[in-house]
Image (cartoon, rainbow over the protein chains, first blue to last red):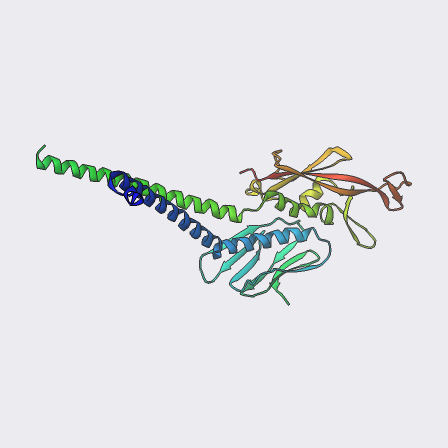
Length: 137
Length: 173
């Protein structure tokens, strides 16, 4: 009986309103978190990360004497890649207009190139002073 | 108060209420957009130290930078710095950032512990160090000598242990 009277009258109304407000605030926080984590897994973020990984890979390969072939450990069939002019560009054909770029810096004598479209396995090959993006053999 | 005055008072109250609510909603939307944007930046941001470690691998390992390469066999010795190559011209060949946007990129100042007076700078380095990377290296100098302590002599030159200090400027803007 005492519990029921807690939510009755003017004071009870005020307590109910406070609880309702708290629930709304919690619901908003949860919604924002859900939205943010789904955004984190969305394509543009992955696209940007792949571009950064490839640029870093090219930067790192300069520091390895000899020839190297490295495979990117992820299915990249959604994307197309272009390497050259000091940057790697990643395109997503499912979302035209979205492209991610990441820059790298090479010694003067190095040459970078490569154009790969929708291949599941992407490799970076370093042969002497040439670094190329290509579909893995 | 007559009915007309009462009604216009209520109208004014409603207008003020909606103005305040619209203002609050706008601020909320902008805040959310800003938070989402900074969250995205946080997700895709690379730690500067990691990037600098990757880029600086070349200084001691690539013959296009300072790594020693045997003239006869063409064999490359990663981790061994050729003292004859350790100069400003070679650094310009090894790592040169763009004249316009290069200030935003990583820039370096390099020093060997054995010759702290001699420091090499990349083209957009402006003495704003963010952090320092230290690498244990071996330095090969041209002159031949006998064995003494860390120094081992050979007909091809003298090899001595050293430290390479890499001062990193992680973007000015």
